[in-house]
Image 1 (tube, each protein chain N blue to C red):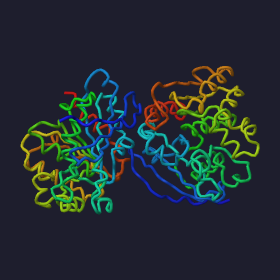
Image 2: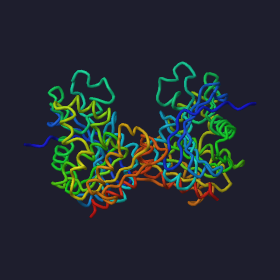
Image 3: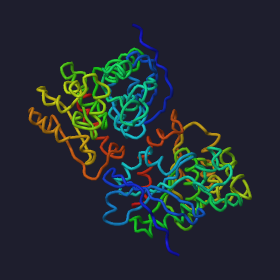
Image 4: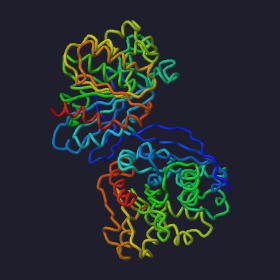
Length: 288
Length: 288
């Protein structure tokens, strides 16, 4: 099957590299137009570079992390590309998808919907883990998806942890990190709403595949995970549940590092503060 | 005269400091509500800190520099506060002020209007150079305005250079820097439009006070100026005119450093790339 053509929408030179916005017709998302941003460091001109995928939170698009995350400075210094996907399909035309800020547009929850109402379009899991690498490689963008890690914020932190933990056997991602992730979405209002809406099997369907705390509890292989969280929205995030499950499963503080930060909030001002730490954490594995 | 009360609208912890948004009723702006952001580094808890004022460009508000500039990381490390004013009065109700993106709201041009249509409200020069320091000090915010420098982008770069050069004798600002500033606004469409609209004396009134190239040509004292510019909008910016006038007036490459950057554009992605350089440039003088 021929790969769809990537259309370049804009490019901005930054930190001696290029931030490029693309769009293409996504077969996985039911032939909707999908957009994403890529930051290519200057060294990409000399050959393929490793990539760190950033998954944004509720209400966000492919732009928030690029504009406010503060990631590109250290990614440029480390020679690592950044891939910023969108958080949901856009324009599916499903009744009610634009009504709520925490469900539907801007809130795809990084899963593959099985509820027939959403299953044609809401497949951000396959879109990001399979389709984007295929399309980007086919277009000749100098990224080496064999050296790939993933991080995210809030809903995107949930995505990063579940993408990483559910693909450990295939080594799709070398490491995962998150800023205030939804760690145990089965027990969180945001997660419950998403799972009941998108999944035919509801919360029980989510347990196997889409709950990071459930996944880490079953994980025996060594892992590389860093989590930073601020002390708010804890009833949505449950980092303590994830940490306990990780320790109970034998993952020590080198494998699963969870740090709490007093006084910070859920905004990009928190993310930017610890952005450099996350880039350097992933660089350990991406450049190994 | 009693100082107006500052109302705190929000606060976000970032880089171990605080970004705080305030509003107050501005007498200088004709009793309109003015908003601004302040970043206070952690060391402000131990005493007054120096401050760097950031003047944003056309269409911006007090938020753009705080969200996208990438300034706070190095300001925090250096122990320097940042002050982000708005770019114009808001809600003056003057006919046509919201029509154009390059005149009126979001485009105050950092001057004091003398055209009667605008002179009651459009006084961003006095608002930023006099009123904000008074109001902020009166509220007990731990900033030492005796250690103050100024920088800006595009229209805000024009503001930074003219604020600095027109107050050299009183040493109000220790240094000035700019990202792609409008250096010779008398010869630029943006500048001509602003001067003809805001000033009763039009462009000739601007020559004495509001044109950085005219000002540097007359400046004999040593100066501390850094300019980075990207190679676009040059017909609006004229950095070469400023550089030639500076050299002709005897200011060498230590006093006036002007750097051109190939491939960059007029966006915050350019600003963020060189943000650290500017913070460290000003730190030399603010911490002297």
